[in-house]
Length: 476
Image (cartoon, rainbow, N blue to C red; front, side, top):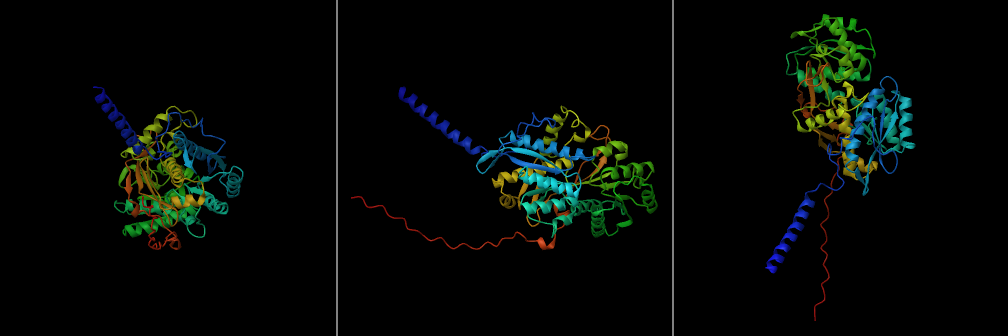
């Protein structure tokens, strides 16, 4: 009986050892974080708990922290704080064999080139940041790219859309663009309208680099995809225009069915509000105001200012969009919205109610950067470049690919018609069900001189020489 008991005991021990090894094999790679797997229940944007000293991974938000647009960078600060809380609570990221947590640094551009340059240099030289992320405004990004190249520091472009800044001579290997582009977003709009009945388009855009780039790209793309399309008018207005009456009367006289604008901020708000006040109607549905197409129509301040009904029928032509039909997006929405209900001002406002649009864009950018750091296992810029070129990101419902030639993110892009009422907001218009345009149909432009920039010719290896192992001496 005793022998049988010992026999069974040995098998139980062996079985436990076997199951333990199976368990180990099934564990994720040591030190590897997983988006949305951390302790996010403790996250509060007003009381962030990332380390402020020590051996950390320093990421600077290089954006406007002062003046009337300071709320933008503060929102990005909250988004990066969310990502840092998620990753830090999982132990951080393994770098050079050591787990390191994320530290956040603020670098105020003041929305002007000279202060932006000084802020970036201070972040690099004094704060010793490892990475920088920003910025709205292609004119500022061009300055940042030059500084990043000079100091060999990785810069994540998550908000500057003009295609040409990633062309030569401005392109350099230290900058990666994770947002969309003018060309890609315009192709998304053109692909959408190519299958719709509207044929008469009026271009009403801001009079600077971004506005003209949008107009040129739309004219070329819509005509290629829809030969019957007509550009019935084209006007450019100064940024921060207050009176759109003269422009909108020209739109009315043209018989336009759609206004292609891509305007942002106060210009977008004033254009929409005044188009409704003047009674410009949608020719295919007189209950709606004339459709206005823009990437920035989900700005909650503007939607709140114009009122929910006025937002109906607007066309949100965006690069990042939550889609509740996708499990990853739904999980993020549930986690974020539950937290939002507990926050205090300014983060309890409708502006932060959902991590959508620009907030989602930045969140993906930060998670992707951290994924690359994890992949490289290093903070060395050259190792980060090698790890990010050709990398893919597939988390929280968002799939991205980093084109190695010009460091441009490639992805399917969404277009939504704004609705009221909707499941997003009580008083604002909100995005309807997204129409997804495949990446192949909204591919961002690329400088032909950069095609194949990172192509490597792999030389065939010489056959390994067979080495004879010394024979053990024969036993006597």
